[in-house]
Image (cartoon, rainbow, N blue to C red):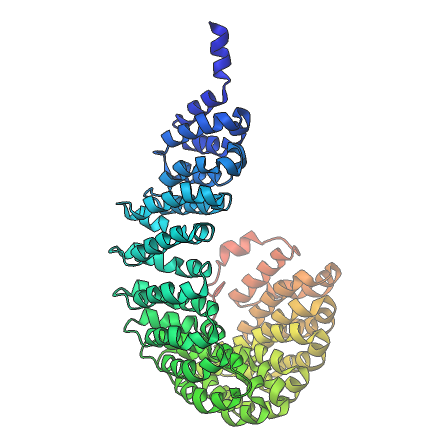
Length: 614
């Protein structure tokens, strides 16, 4: 009897049963993922008669196992004998479509939709449609939710009588007492409408659509906004205004801000669906209402769509509508109390320049740009500066500079240092927008003047800008225009300005490379080692440590090392500490343990001075 037991232990069904009873969930999932292999080994008849009944018996496992099973069954048609026997897969999938876990139900419904196309018309009516009806009539909410996604795949292949029954079932779901069921039906209304004839859409779908659009729950009503796009794409132009626009206008004035937000978010899609004529008569007023909505989220969503909405307007009336009906509302948004609204507007309003042309841009848009450029919110200013190229291409660099430079100069010379800091930080972006020639002529001297500002935060930001500017314009430009000005600061009577020289050299050395650093900047650093102010001298040591990594070893040994050794003998404890640290980091000499014991690390080491140093 040992031999039969041995054979039975190798039976694919026995192996599967053993693995599915294992406590290790991952092993059970792996077994489910190998179902197709087991089905191949069993053959189509045993798969239908033995494997599928076994699968039904294990439908009370963990959700992860059921999810893998629902996915596998969607590919099982060839393994049960092809389309003729595909209906054998319906019972396990029907059970999976009503489980508690949503992700399992969704995967089961996805598999049902996939295998529905492999049913013949007679099998659809005999097997698939009864399944749908059972789900619709089920007591469980999950059953009716799953049913909502199956109408669009079985409706086209059945007889007229069955189609009428399916329409009635769908109507029942759309008026279900449970909110989740109505939401599921509303979400699938568009897909269902796509498989209906135009007359059926008008007579059956539009009434359902209207009822759902006036549902007492805003969760249902907001879904109808997207459905409005889908249905409008299916209807002839002459039927749109009577059948869709009334509902859309009501949605735009809905008492729930979430519904109005959805209208604003989908507005350009609606615009494309209804066409230019209805846009002019119906959507322009609706867009105005959204731009002045009392909820900032709705105004922000409408502002985001401003450019796209204007681009999609018919060329016959586009310019006139923008100037007379859109821009007046945009002007109000420029001073909106909510910064997110202003930021959304700033991100798109530059895109109107190509649409309106040079003269209209100068007359109508430039005042809005300049107002947004002065906005207190950094995101608003950044969105304007990031899109200046749109304006430049339309009105030209000279006209743009005529309007923009006074505002830039006004901000750059503001008495409040935080206002000045804003324009300093955006200067590399402005330089990239305007180009080298304009920058050298109009903005270069302004950038250099910030290096001697009386506020440290401004000097620091201006120093960091130099690196970004050199990355944009190249090291030859830096050698000709930036480095000479920086080096002259080493002769300034104010020691803070002399330290700025060192800070600039630190950042410029990273982008200018070894040759320029060695020939043009290193001599100044070495010279400043004799500065009478200790703060300057210990920053010399820190700068030599910073730029030493890009210098040749011979330069380090012959020029840098002697200076650092001299600074280790300085009378100031900070200078000696940083000089010794630089020697160690650059491997130019051993640490003097005696000195470190006698002279502990100074309080200034590793700390920045006050950003408001005068």
